[in-house]
Amino acid sequence: MSQQVIVHDPRGYPPRVTGKQLAQRLPNLSGKRLYLVDCLFDNSAAFMAQLRAWLRQHLPDLVTEIIRPRESWVDDPEMRATIAANGDAAILGVGL
Image 1 (tube, rainbow, N blue to C red):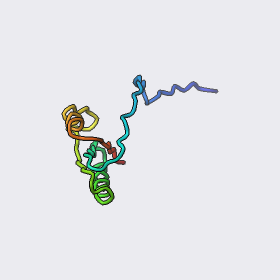
Image 2 (tube, helix red, strand yellow; image 1 turned 180 degrees about the vertical axis):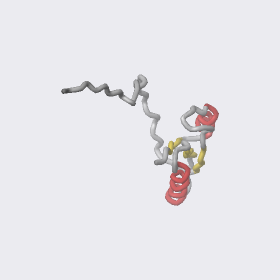
Image 3 (spheres, rainbow, N blue to C red; image 1 turned 120 degrees about the vertical axis):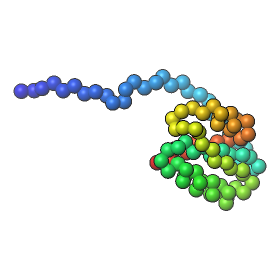
Image 4 (tube, rainbow, N blue to C red; image 1 turned 135 degrees about the vertical axis):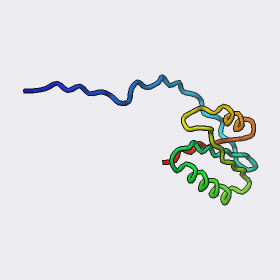
């Protein structure tokens, strides 16, 4: 005897996504300020510290600063404003 099975999709309903154009690429990083954004994921702080050490060794003219949002998964307008006002670029680190 066959039995009907109901399967529920745990992914829910994806949000509507609108594509945006990427920011212009910098011609070089010499003398620029790069913010390394530790997004508070597991191991992202360690990754950002290692990335910063590598950048200091290989691009000594680049100024790097690690910055963190107030909490994970929540927009931090103050942090974004700091990056926009003082930075030339940013890398978001999400860890493992």
